[in-house]
Image (cartoon, rainbow, N blue to C red; front, side):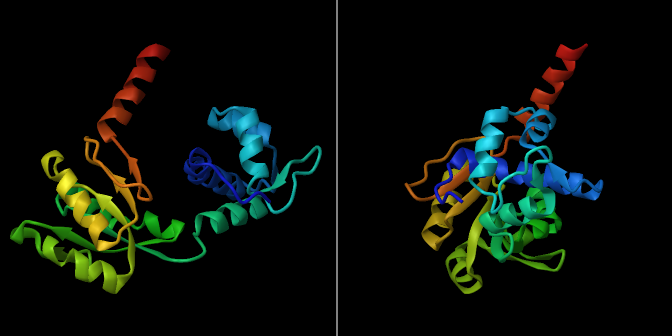
Length: 208
């Protein structure tokens, strides 16, 4: 199995995992890269290359990959078999929703805390602590927090990002509709909910 996997491939693995778990739930034990590519709207060549780089066992002619083995391989590569602590930065409505969302656990991500600059929201929500932003350095070290979920306002995004990085967070999922500067070695992914919804609406209009 190849050790070097591109960033683009790594970003596709969670989607593969979601699809494969759905197929496993339907009782499908084997699946081919061509079927996955068609179902997910991806290039068959790209899917075949992605799976070849992660699978511990090659696909079988005529049947493809064993679904359960492929799920285990992807979960291992993404680190889902181990626990990764995460924190929300920005405890507004979206931040609290992220704090309460239990779907992260299925992917080995445990959201342990949130941080905010407003004294009004400091305390706890859904049984998890919300700390003042100035305590991020202490709490990140103590709880071994490696991932940050950014849900602050646009104007506070860069300052919050800087504090996260200084505290030792090396991977950020940002829901802020603004780009921020991060140093080399820090991973950041942007999720723009409004843009995603616009894309869905655009696709609906094209289909009419």
